[in-house]
Amino acid sequence: MFGPGQGLYWFIVFALLALISGLLFLIIPFFLAPRRRSAIKEDTFEAGQLPPGAKRIRFALQYYAYLLLFLLFDVTIMFLFVWAYSFFGEGRYGFAYPLALIAVLLPPLIYAVKLSKIKEMW
Amino acid sequence: MTETPRGDFFKTFRIVVTIVFLASTALLLYMLYGPAMSVISYFLRDPQAFLVDPLFMVLIFPGLTYAGLVAYLAIWGERKFAAKVQNRVGPLYAGALPGGILQNIADLVKILFKEVIIPRDSDKPIFILAPVFAFIVGSLPVVLVPYSPTYVILDFPVGLILFFVFTAFYPLVLLLAGWSSNNKFSFIGSLRALYQQASYEIPLFLSALAPVMLAGSLRLVDIGSAQGSVWFILVAPISAIVFFTSILAELEKYPFDIPEADSELVAGWLTEYSGVPYLLYQFGAYIKMVAYASLFTVLFLGGWAGFAFLAPEWWMVIKVAIVVTIVISTRAFFPRIRMDQLLSAGWTKLIPLALLSLASLVVLQMLGLLAFLR
Image (cartoon, rainbow over all chains, first blue to last red; front, top):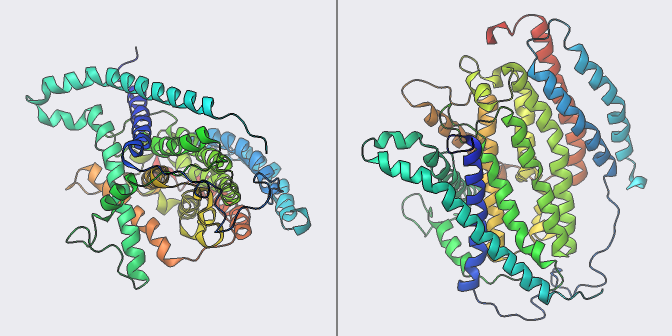
């Protein structure tokens, strides 16, 4: 049964409270704040300049190697959590499994860090 | 650039937002009706029981009022402390004794009367809704952190992972904000925020593994209760340091405030925001700081462990206040570092340090020195 005795119920209440207070704050300035539109005010801000050229330019992701690394690590860490959960229950050599996991991860880490230092790749 | 007909779409958007607002308000009132009735029925007989009611927890103590109050004091304290260190005065006139403590309320009133400027070329629906998403995502982790075994709103069996799930949404929201602003400063700022928060998630997770190993649980109440005798910061100090550094990066606090670097990027991904949306972003970020500070307290500083003359919740509150003070004091002490320095420090120093800490725990366990925790 889903009811006030459960944490999930109060989690939904909290989320709704956050949503409602956020939307409420957005609605308030419709009644309080002035709204005088002008072309220059609604233009893109560019530190006092008139914005030149196209706004949505495409440019290289500078630290691309790090994002690849992130994909690598973020998945693996969840397995480490499962291991850490039963750290005391594994006996003497239970540490060997994560060690193997980390040993597999280390060469790509070193390679990608080396890759990220090459400025020509940016 | 091709013009898209936005007029009709914007009208539909406003209607949809109104419907969502009314529907969620109705749902909230429906969900609060039963609990509120029961509180009214027993309140006069037993006012003490209200203090452990879930309604009290959501609305007041570990919930919205408490988090908002700590965020409020943190904003004031950050301004005052940084000003004192930099030989300025800081907030002074509003509020009497601890100078300028009402300054934030004055600022709130000012911001509510400010015009909300929406750039012509922005993606308006996303541009307007992104602050609300940021506020929700920033405040959701507060639900999960226990302040004592009784004062926890959602006692989830894998609460630590759920906490990281909520905080992992934050860079996505920033990317939405930066892209929808259609501004070069915003986009570069949000990309930097994405890099920083995504990169520092890895040392954050790795260092959070140490308390999980020592407590043998992912439930935050169990992790806190396991530290009755020894705080985990004493068993795994390197993990605690790595965790704290990663918190600073996740919160864009001062040595790592690269996404909002005001001397390079105007205000980063906040450049086009003004008035109330800006307020929502800042308030959400500070509530997120409260959540992270309390998570650090639960994982490493013993949670609610303390001497018996105060209730456990009060120990937790005191420790969280100390952690928040340390987090906001970095603003006055550290210069900003460069983006590539930040990333290479995260990947080449913090991750090996976190792994080293885990290895040290494995060695301690093999030598049988961790038996006192069982």
